[in-house]
Image 1: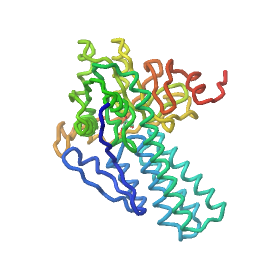
Image 2: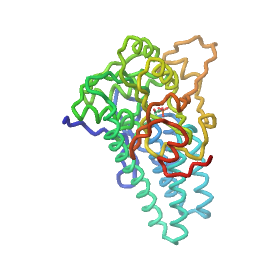
Image 3: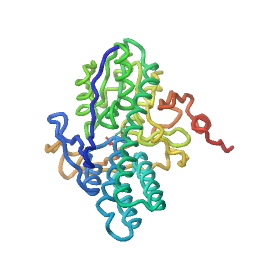
Image 4: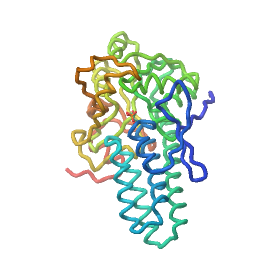
Length: 354
Ligand code: MRU
């Protein structure tokens, strides 16, 4: 077994939250403090931190920071609602944010109903955020343990966006599976989609793989089909921002095209995600709010303009992969294969209505 490093994208110390500024990677590792809940909201919106699970975790800390800022003011519940709303509105697609904020709000209501003093409330909220962080880390290790079974020895694995330590509390979901397979001693090569326009693949995934010494090659997003047609891809594995009750998956734009290509070429297409990414209250992918970002992100690469200034651009950040294109979903509780409403609800012990 190989021993891998543990990369952490955040640190919480003495009730202060620090994160790696992911916009600066891979050129430099710069830690920044998010001192107020508005700092947290801005960091999520501007993608200083990103990745569905990490957005949830940082959102949870942000909620606790916000309550700490406002605890001495009258009507704490009204303030809590404003903090909740500000944080939730930062990015709409990843359900982990809403999930974590709901959990924090519930915790606050319970603490208030127990008449806890202000200091106890603050401490308990920070503790809850820490638990969310730790749960995510352990969920990722478990996803990796189950998922690595699906990665053959001596194989070429294609992945999209960044689903690694930088997108989570550590280790990662889809990239965590790749980490676990490599740790098990498997020989793998990873094809890393660059993932336009934010380049989470070439900037972040490649950086993580390099830290771990895992063999990889960055490819342009449009290379995937050609590589598949030449038999150069054995497995595709991606993460998720929201999985609905019928098994549809929202993930980084370009995921849907990969799933169609994989299906066409008979290549297994796996999704790795913790339970916090499932939205069982939502029926299908059609209902998922898809974030549309500033068109300038398409027209610029860093400071460099790469399109005519007058040309309009369209910048959807996510797409929907239909359940039928997915071979299996890997969760911290095990694998779900044959993806449909029935298998998903059964997996989570929910009653399946006919
Ligand atoms: O826009 P981003 O960088 O937040 O998008 C990230 C993704 O799409 C990831 O694949 C997803 O959040 C899963 S991360 C474990």
